Image (tube, rainbow, N blue to C red; front, side, top):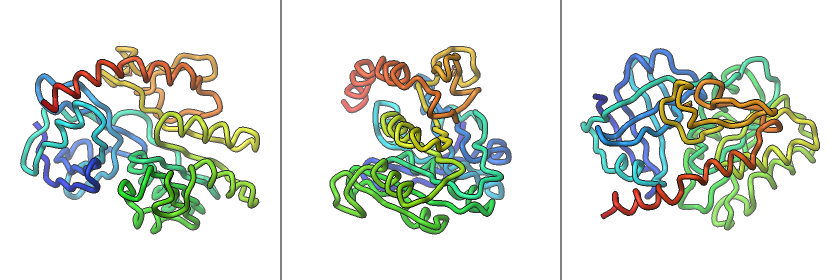
Length: 273
Ligand code: FES
């Protein structure tokens, strides 16, 4: 069992949990994730690691309430325990050797984009960040991003904070302004990553996306996280989560992502009743 040592509501639907997991904290790298189960009967969900504190032996995750499991997770308090907490899983994001990058984060995906942006920054890379949220109430980690960014654009869909528009609008502006990037790294909703990849393709800019499809075992055995990249089948949990965004079969990924929507809606309604 894994004890929650800190719980912070960042926004009404976005929560930070710091969990005691010293063995994972010792090994975790930016871009890697854990799979947790809230209780004995719970489903397994993957969540990317926001921070690993080796001194305290803790892992911090940030999640948005999007379904039954995250709703249950949100009801956990400091001092409560989680049934399972397994990791670090997946390959770490490659951040060495880049001169200039643009990190694009969407919504709660920013919780993952931040440690990656920080790792680039700590490696001496010039970091431009574009972060996007639906509205002002959902903005998270603004100061964290500012601290590691040479250039930062904060976008909201409705213009209630930062600039009005999509992350792809801001990314295009930066590219059109003459910025050439060794790499664009995107993490957020599937559609956002798809359109970031479509935006960078005409410019020939290498684009890495962090995929988070449905995962069950996290060990490459169940096939739940199967995606197609460059015509080959890949398992996001062991081959990723980072992939070349220009090679991902987005139509298949979106279709597979929607497969369990109805089931999830029922489970969510039950969890709320
Ligand atoms: Fe089972 Fe990846 S989660 S193969």
